[in-house]
Each structure stands twice: as C-alpha cells, then as structure tokens.
Image 1: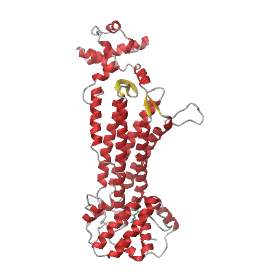
Image 2: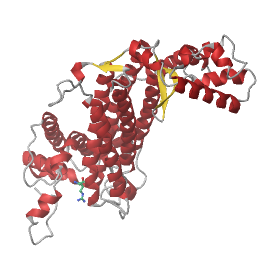
Image 3: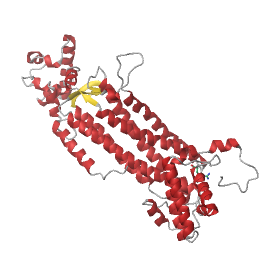
Image 4: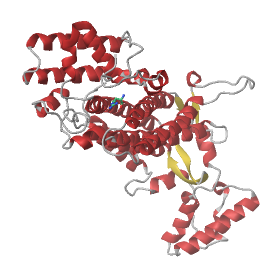
Length: 463
Ligand code: ARG
C-alpha cells in the first residue's frame, strides 16, 4: 500500500521505491508506533472522530501487529515503504477503511519523531542499567586487589607507583560521568512532538497533555516546525554513546597492555581469549581489541548525524530517514560493548607477584626521593636535578633504586639519612599521597565508599 498517490498520473519508478524504502530497519520502531497509534485512536475517539467500536477494533489490530513485530512474525509487503505504511496497510486489511481514519490529523513526520524519541528513552534507560552493572564489576575487582601496587605510567613510561584499585576506580569515575550523560540524553528525548502534524500542527481537537502523559512523556514540544525536524536528541544520544565507547576503548587498551608479557600485570581467562591459526602458543585478547575497534563505528555514527542535519531547511526533509541506522547501530554497539567489557573484567586475574616484580624497574620512586630532599629544605628544582643525577648514576652502574645504600646517596647530598631508603619503598610512596583524590589506601577506601553510595542510590532495573 502507498500512503500517497492520488494526484499522480504515473506509477513510481521501481528504483525509486527500492532506494527510498526503510522498512528493513525501521520495523524496530514498530512496537513504539503501535502504542503511539493506540493513544492517537483514544484522542480521535475523545474528539468524536471514531466511535467506540471503531476505536476498539483499531486497538485490537494494533495489539496483534505489536505482538507480531515483537515476535518477528510481522510480514511487510513489497509495497510497504516503511513501518508506518506497513502498519496502516495492515490495519486497513484487517478492518477495512475504518482503519484509514487513524491517519486523521497527523503525519508520518510527527509520528516518526515520536516513535524515535520513545525508542531513545527506552534504549538509553537500558544502557544506563548496563553501565551500572559494569561499574559494580569494576568496584568489586578494585576491592579484590586492594593490596596490589603497580607502576603508574605517563606517556606510557613508568612514572609513579599507584594502587591497582586506584587505576580501576578511575574507570568507574569515567563511567559515572557516562551515566550522567546518558540520563541527560534520555531526558532530551523526553518531549512529545505528536500533534505537530506534517509541520504546522493539527486541526483536530486533541489534548496533547493527556496524550503525552499516556505515552510516558513529561514534556510537550512547543513549536510544530521545530518538533518535526528536531533531531538534537539523536545527536545528544550519539554523543553520550560515543563517549562511552571512547572510555571503553581506553579501558580495553589498558587491559590489553596489562595482559602483555611486558606489563605482566594480569591474565585473561581462557574462556575470553582467542588463539592464532598459525602460532600455536598464542592467547589473544580479541574481545577488548574489538571493543576498541568498534568505538570508531560509534564516533562515525555521531559524525554522520551531525553532517546529516547540517544545512537542512526547515521543516521535515527525507534526509532524516538516515538517522535511524546510525542511531540503532550506536545503541547496539555500545550496549554489547558495555556488556562484554563487564565479562572481560570479571575474567581478568591480576597477578600480585609479577606486578610487584615490574615495580622494581623504572625508578618510579624518583619523585618521592626529590620530595624527601625538598621536605628537608632543598628547593624542588635543585632536588629534582640531584635525583636526576642519582638516576644517571644508577643507569651507569646498572642498578635499581632499591639496591642503593645510604653512603651512595650521601655522595649526592649530605641530607640523606637512614630514612631515605623509606622514600624508595613503593608502599611508602603510595601511602604518602593522602590528599583528596590521591592513591593512598585511605583515599581509595573513601572513593570505594563514595562509589558504593552512588551505585546504591539508583532505582531498580528498568530493562
Ligand atoms: N521513513 C520516513 C523517515 O524515517 C518517515 C517519514 C516520511 N515522511 C515523508 N514526508 N516522506 O523519516
């Protein structure tokens, strides 16, 4: 069936039909559409355009169609351009031309915007749940490894010792911001365009507030021209999803490094590793690598939408049909990536012994040795120079800090006393960083408490 054509003398070219069809992907809007149309039927009834039995028969077909779409048994016809057409065709097939009354006062333009907003609200609520669950996994891992110190890196060079839990918790704080962004994006979608018609509004006496309430929207769009062509909420959702993927990609990269022989910090359980077709010894972390790779897709999805919208004249333009595949792709990619990263982290075993072994390399307590001198009154720039000399000496002697003796240290400064060796102990270095947000065990404990509180303050599951 076609929703238009009365004024045409010619049939559409087959290629036009093929090129413009969106039913292969927009069927995903179907379950939202049937709800929206059901609520619209109630309004048409309230306004006197449908009688009770017409309304009931329309709603009963809509229910059947909704079940079929959910169970994957809904069969579109070749002529159905999109899901909106397919549902209307089906309603008319089942109950005759009474079904045609359902189109009164609205257009596919306000319908598609309404359906898409409902989908975004639901999907983002689910992604929020998934993030929450990932955060909880990170938190419990951080609690398990509280006694492991690892070399922290900047520029991927050994920098200062940190608690492994501190690094893991940094991932949880990234996800805390992601949850806020997702909630923000979900709320941006929460405004009902229905009743905007094609662009100018509707002449039917509907109660938009009642309609919004029924559909679960808390706000109404204020301008029909804006409402049918506003896809800011899609960009907001995609930005929030792209940020999640950027964070997951960085987390994935960190785990990939930790699994290497060079870092020797962690091992990934075999269930989550893959092998090589040529190198029998290999165990590869393909899953975090794929998450890292898939981040590019979602960033691309965001860029596509921004470019899609740039330069569109008001109001609806068919270009906007292109928003759906990008949106759905970003939702599916981000959801599955959050979910697998949770499994990967659960399947990661940190190895205290080998992590401690790598701690000895890289002079990572150098800052603390300089702090030691500075705390005794040497200005920090001189202390920095002096410790630089000590590092140079160790390199030429091929020794690590921990094998330095007090007499050796005294050659660089008389201020070094017995307690100087303490400054070279990674435990003491970690312990010393007590200022709020630092890696000291008490501070890490405080963060755990704070995150636990944030995670508890959330309502029950929505998915
Ligand atoms: N398939 C279209 C979309 O997704 C539905 C709206 C069509 N409106 C129109 N005026 N042709 O955007």
